[in-house]
Image 1: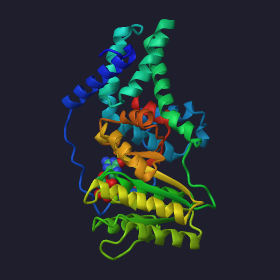
Image 2: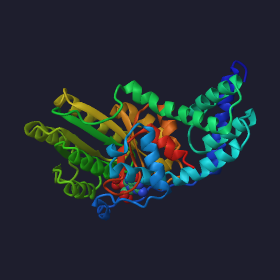
Image 3: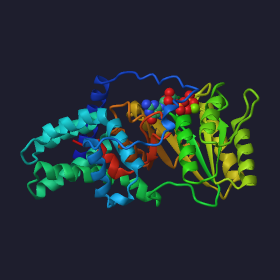
Image 4: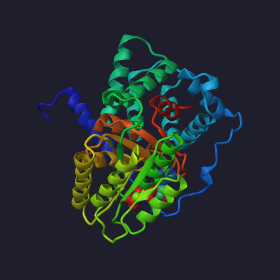
Length: 384
Ligand SMILES: Nc1nc2c(ncn2[C@@H]2O[C@H](COP(=O)(O)OP(=O)(O)OP(=O)(O)O)[C@@H](O)[C@H]2O)c(=O)[nH]1
Ligand SMILES: [Mg+2]
């Protein structure tokens, strides 16, 4: 491998190890068939849970972000508890190993080698793993690092990776801009949770006082329009659709933007297909939808959000690359963190695709979606 620097060589070796690990753990995950009826029991207001370990942990995480107890809502506590439970599987493999690696002694280069494997196994990805380890190694060269300090330094590094694309975007939190047309396009391969996410976003928007409208632009699958209508009904958000078979998605978006402009709607959520006859068709269709938006609503604040199923791990990265040019991606929604052991992929997405993670979904319920917060995510990922 002449001509490669040591670092490049190391990265290549790590890539190989990642492949070997992935191959060893490869289980083909068939995305579940989409359902028309979403679960109903979730519209309930959050209940105050027991003052248990999770409750205490949630309160501590909020307090650490400078939130006073009187500023904290029940919902935030409730969500953090769910996020922590959602990341349970990722954490179980990750933290147990991590703590074993860290042990009681100061960090050593051998510990860092083990840490590298742990991070790669958790789908953190080669580039993010490299960055974190380089920082840890440098720190190790400067002084003796005890395990607790090592852990907090690690958390800080992980947070930084997640924050980079968020800071670069200039917007810490993604919310629709008031008194302006915002168009949020939800794209991604089939079964990742686009429609569910759209339903949850519509609910979040309504609860936050935005006027909202849904464009049912997945005209490929027969049941898709009905599915999105059910979600619309649950939050009393109107759905614009085209009843004719094989309707043109761009035409649906055209109608929806017209309706939004005449009503002064603030947020249009666009549901798109995850599968067409060919991948090429899908990308063409998205490009067309995107073009219609840019043409019809040149002043709108457009977000193109790639929905990624966390359980698909590193496949998400490939999906991000594929959708990036057709849809002009601006961010990512990571779903199904509750069912998967691969929550670490959030770090791979942030560092390799350079896209800010905007929302995360941890459940099928209408409230199981929250804006992404890197502090909370890393704390939930590495909670004891
Ligand atoms: N456990 C869990 N399930 C989810 C989550 N988000 C979505 N799902 C489920 O994933 C399945 C597919 O979700 P959809 O929203 O229909 O996915 P889609 O991307 O719109 O699928 P297509 O329209 O076929 O491309 C459904 O059974 C959802 O209930 C989540 O955060 N956690
Ligand atoms: Mg769908």
